[in-house]
Image (cartoon, chains in turn blue, red):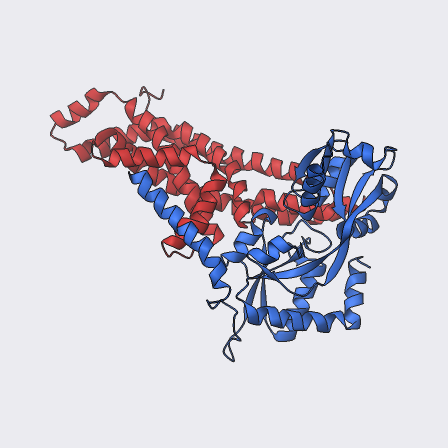
Length: 269
Length: 222
């Protein structure tokens, strides 16, 4: 009986939270729904996955660095906001945003219909890229042969690359999906032979190759997948004011020469 | 070579993580010890419905993965109770509650290994229940349990790595970020492994010292 009461209580609460979320978007006021009263400091907690260079990673001093970090710093500076950097595991980052552990996600997050319709709303897109299947340079098999090899293909867990692997499996291809913690680990798996191929995207691979030129002779892009996709900054649906401010700043930044300098700085051209 | 020098610059960052790990472990072990003592005494000496509740508690905390407990407390139970908890406090609390379940069983075993006649003897010289427990049974039981609590320390130390799922920047997480930022997979993890070994060594040595200091010659624990 006690288990029942406790379980019921917890389940009820979770359900309430979950159901509440959809209505909150339109009815309830969020933390950043409206402009703050004048004179009050705006503190934004930025959640990011520090395992996604060059967009988000950690430098020697333990500070956040990367393209997305610079973009958010630029935005915060424009409005005089205080930024708090909070590294968070990618697999639970959306829940952390919903529950207010963090206020925005700027971490190379792809705008997808599932994500956008559910619990997070995105800023305007600020970067576009395309998915790619990468194999070792000495592998001469065709795409068809690789996808039907029954062997492991590495992806980052929870990423859009994993979605692509699922899509391909659904189409009837026969390979094993090998989920790893980050794009870098997945690439490692390809290089040391645990995987025969690796699904990634140009946003990660191109800068990674220009940073590690020795890799260029070891791997090759077999094909691109689908159409280009875009990154956006994620916010809670109800934080209308915050999203508007971010959009305003993003369009200003993207139309300024500083944008190209930032892209160049992180090898993203 | 270049990447190796950049790796060496990350070492202080990794080392700093050991402070977070130690904080998690000491907090967890401490809370767990208090819960453990309380619950083991109730389990052995009390016959109320409390005993049932405690066995449910132990079942839950030993029966579910730490990750599940962290999520449940951080995103369901604490918000439902109106507690605004930071990832660090949730992590320490959950590690403590969890360790409490394990330590209560360690201590229950230790209490059980003390002969019942000692309790009878204590009562025969006029001690009440609490006096007998606090000055006869517990001092022996805690000594007997010490080696196992030291074991528990080394287990929580490595369990604490899971707290990263709530964004606590402990040792393993820092090793992971370093591996990703430098593109070197093996060495940052090896460094973290060595630090864990060091922390385990220091911790268990400390427990050994306490054990030697407190040992009663000729008693059960030998």
